[in-house]
Amino acid sequence: MQTNISIDRFDLKILRALQENGALSNQELSEKVGLTAAPCSRRVKSLEDNGVIKDKVIRINERALSLDLFAILHISMDKHIPERFAEFERVISTFDEVIECYLITGHDADYQLKIAVPDMDRYHDLLLGKITRIKGVSGVKSAFIMRKIVDTTALPLNYTQL
Image (tube, rainbow, N blue to C red):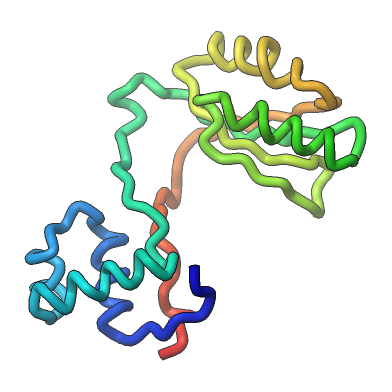
């Protein structure tokens, strides 16, 4: 994967369009960005090959699946040693309820998780039945998300140098 590739205005148009709707066909995308189908397809392939486009996903309405409770958890570890962190990361990666996990600094915690569950009973089961049983977890602080104000996967593209 190349780290610094040249991005021009057509590439930016492609990225903007795909961030808005990743399900666009190549024909729809080419019309939207002002290219013919073949060069548009080559550009998308190049953006994928160079790691600019990581993956394509479908966003699901969480309420349609009865996932009504979202929480941010701050996890503290008892020892700051590589083996402890590696084991925590390995185990936490197996929990479907964990939709984000970050190793953080500048806080009273070592990790920040975002989790999704149907209700408080399932949150309780996840917390006490799984998370606090991971070797090295010494503390958990939870904050519950009441409402999403910004909910996007789109990255700001206005910092890209042309």
